[in-house]
Length: 161
Image 1 (spheres, rainbow, N blue to C red):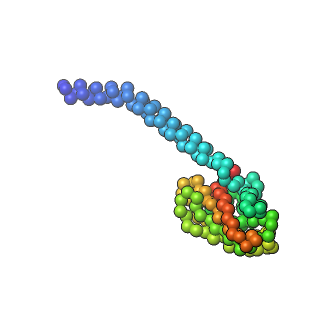
Image 2: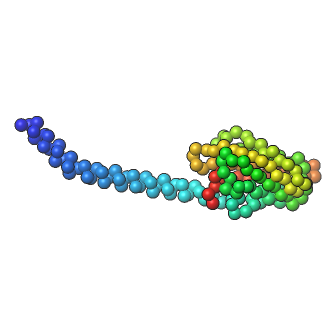
Image 3: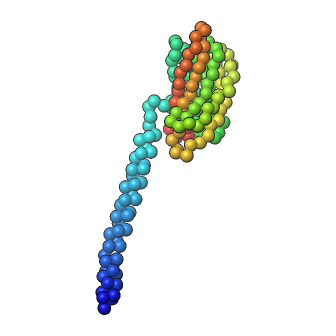
């Protein structure tokens, strides 16, 4: 008799609590999705990054304006990219390399061709990052009037904007 009472009690509780349990789980999953979406949207906007889809990235150092562009502008991972650099004044010994800003992804040299003393072009390719948010940092070094100068630029790989 006790066994049948316990069985009946479990049956009644299951019928009453199961819909409530399912509802709580669904509400929790919805909240998780909203939080995840909010985090992605917040990270996607960083005004300090170069946005090649909106135009050249302009840096000034030692009285020289550097205009950096990337093609394709959305900077896809694991695809050949062309980096162009235009300078307002002639420079010498230009070197550019890429590294991950927030995580180590190796050192990627940009093989440059000097088209003239103010126009350079180079090819590069970099790997993808599993996080979906990979910021690359470009290190630019050059000589002007016998002095060495440097500047950095950051940009988002696989940039949808």
